[in-house]
Length: 274
Image (cartoon, rainbow, N blue to C red; front, side, top):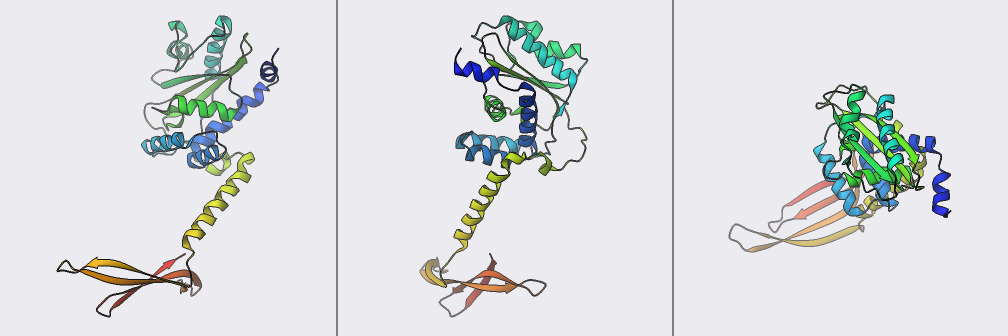
């Protein structure tokens, strides 16, 4: 038996299910942080990151965490049983498009009396981690990105090892065709602790980058060309220097002073807080 098969058989399926739920709700509640981390870890490409960000703009509403529902777990388990019974090692299944219509998710959810609801099913083979599974789901469904759609509210998951020794994960999500009222939640509660270090590193890098952008010499002068009413070039001198401004409480705040000197002798002084 290959090492890959041994690794599959050694996976803690219950723990993996918990990790998947944690990962999907991290994505839904903190999508920008999630994408920054996955890109930083090279688990999502820069192009996929940009495409997913574009999809987020289409869903400006709060994406509440998905709730596990036992009957949806059972719905996913039925698909897993079907795949286990028919496994020949050559499945290439996406988006619930199955040869046997009785195993469409639409047919299965009716058994559990889920009516007039949005639904979707993901089937993932040979994933190595919860991150791998959720990234696979997002990229696979990039056109609609249902996993981050705020109209979906419930989730069910079934995980098993097929006779061909391939890990198989079935994820079913359900929701309403309209936005429902949801309980309040704290998004920081859904950031996995294992990412705290890398989040801190990303924040430090961003802060250093901002500081570098704001750094200037004691005085920096340059010239820009403007045009007067006659269309003639009129050089204007601009100088930048580090300074301080006072806030409403009288405290001094680091700032940059921009002085624009015009040819007629007038000048405009502007302050920018760092």
